[in-house]
Length: 319
Image (cartoon, rainbow, N blue to C red; front, side, top):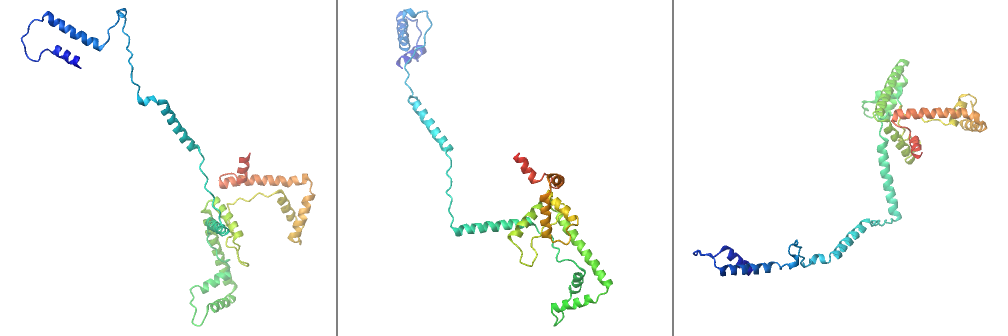
């Protein structure tokens, strides 16, 4: 630091304006001494043998950074933390412990699941328009004569119905023909309304509704002597199932007239025995009919539903 100040002072010269005088030999000698001392302080002198050779970089001892002194250990610790985190990610999650239900809780759970399933099936089963009771001329007449009629004082509803029934018996053939015509019109109107409702739904929706209705009929049977609450929905678009070879043979034998005046049970027994006695060439005729019927079913099913039957889909997936 002191050498730098002396150098700056000599280079700048005196701060005060002094009269310039020529430099003496002593001044030049003192300046040379100062510069030589500064140079010897900045860099060491080169040996004589190095004169004329390019200067070599001077290697100085540099204090090692304390942070990099244990760089290997720090790197190992970072790698260990990463490996530990990776192992935690790969570890399989613990499965929740399954709660063991008591018999009462299990029964309650099953009842709730069954109730939920029934509700969903009832939605799937749809609600077709009601057709009411069978339309006849008598029903039309009774409805016409009791609808809007006020029961008089002292006359009950059964008595009013009895009176209308007596009037029905006195009708002429021409009047009965009139009510037959009205009954036929009502029947046709109901059938047209029912058909419009059915065709307003896609065929696969009606098919699913009938599957749901079959399940509901089995699980919720109607009371004895009453009709089921879930009759199948009649859809003219439905594809008839293919008939097996034995059914083809049974239809053919029943149409022959050989089993007249024989009960259905005995008839089925005789036809079954005949089928067992047929040889393979005779059975092949009905097997060919079955094959043709299956082809017909596959074609019609694809036309109606837009895809092949589920049985063929399963067979193709398994192949």
